[in-house]
Amino acid sequence: MEAEPPLYPVAGDAGPQDDQNPFGVPDGPEAPLDELVGAYPNYNEEEEERRYYRRKRLGVLKNVLAASAGCTLTYGVYLGLLQMQLILHYDETYREVKYGNMGLPDIDSKMLMGINVTPIAALLYTPVLIRFFGTKWMMFLAVGIYALFVSTNYWERYYTLVPSAVTLGMAIVPLWASMGNYITRMAQKYYEYSHYKQQGDQGPEQRPPRGSHAPYLLVFQVIFYAFFHLSFACAQLPMIYFLNHYLYDLNHTLFNVHSCGTESHGILNGFNKTVLRTLPRSRNLIVVESVLMAVAFLAMLLVLGLCGAAYRPTEEIDLRSIGWGNIFQLPFKHVRDFRLRHLVPFFIYSGFEVSFACTGLALGYGVCSVGLERLAYLLMAYSLGASTASALGLLGLCLPRSVPLAAGAGLHVLLTLGLFFWAPVPQALHHSWILYGAAALWGVGSALNKTGLSTLLGILYEDKERQDFIFTIYHWWQAVAIFAVYLGFSLPMKWTGDIFLGLVLGTVIQPMACDTQKVAGTGWKHLTFRLNDEQTQKWSRGMPGLGKAQLSSSPSASGVEGRFAGGR
Image (cartoon, rainbow, N blue to C red; front, side, top):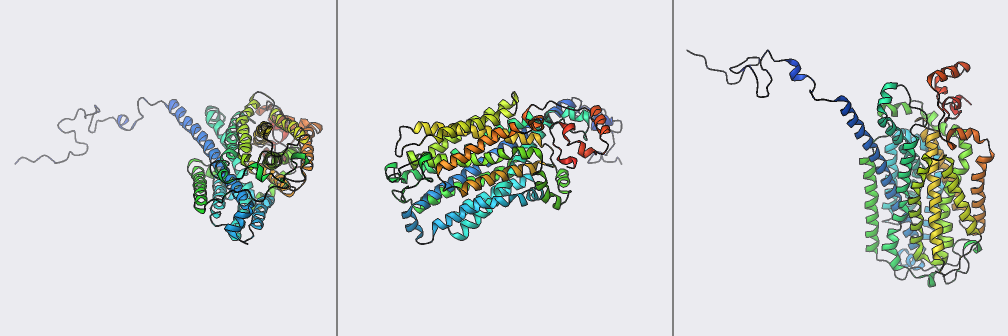
């Protein structure tokens, strides 16, 4: 009896057609193993590597754009809501009808105090939070706190507004420190992904040359601040499309205002206590706040979903391995860095000038002269001027890096001198073009200052172990300057102009009067000095007491690093 053929072919059995399978490869026990599991015959390793790193570079660009857009939306919502609520709460009729004797002005003063005073303590906890949560998650947490502040305005009470304002004040410096650290890390990653062949030849332990990421950092900072300065324009959209329809014109609001600019004793003395012709419906206010809340939630999603990690997990562990006690005290030790001591006037001036633009220039000159209904357009002129002029930061690619900083400070000196000797007439629109031009030019100076200063810090302190400390100190000094403006809000405008003019002149003259060669070799000039391995070995033999870690951050070895790590 003849055996029936098996239902399924036996593994290894040649079968009736054992020469080739449908793919043209010999089957059975004689099949060549390399043809089955070997490399793809047309595989090009170099081309695949090039495509891989191109995707990595596109991912870095996506991270920068997402962080910039998230910060823009966050600050646009925050500034727009704060401006709208302060105008509504200023109106006496609105307070009496909506809230009775709840004490809304006192709540607003406590809220502003929480926003402006709390960042003074940020130097104590910011680096600890950034190292604990990580750079990306610190950004996400801070953006979420801004969204929390927006949500509390649905129910305006002391126990909702004041705690949320204090929490927001605590998140201001961590947000900006982590954002500056994030942009700097993205520039360093982009350099690594663009020069991956050099990195492979040098080995994983070899660090890239000092200042090699500077062109990419400059471009990324320009992109970031071009986006961020648009937040001032975005903040005016609730004012233009909603609140302006309820405002009185300047003949009513400025009826008792008799002096503006340097002739005024304070900001908006005599401004009318009623600025609303009709009260907005609660339903319309809820709709506007819901839109702002949705935008704040979108900013959270941008940071969460599109921003990649700044460090690898092993790097995060290394950053925490120095101990939480050292992380807490290192910002105070970095304050003694000689380069930071020379840059402190720039830090203070950087915070003072943006506060002066939003208070002294916009209110003391703009609203006092052309009315509250044109406040939004003045701030939009400032915003668009700053956003457009951020591209001027690219001049740092072909000019010394001191040029953008000096140009921004010099422009502010000229504008301050002009405003110091000019007092606009209240209720006069014929010189409104001067105010718009001054606001736009002030934005140009702000863009040059912010872009140049952030780029300079990212170049001077490119070690990942120090970046969060440096940006914390920078934005902490900015917070101190904004707090000083908050304290002197009721001073006469001429006194404010004197203080600001003296600060700007000191900022420009001080680096020139000091030993500029210490700073000039680090960032004020182009970073062209490098030491190869042979020179480094000779130099280290001449200083036997200096270790390898200290050598990497000493001024003679790097040309851009200070002597802080050398055991001062």
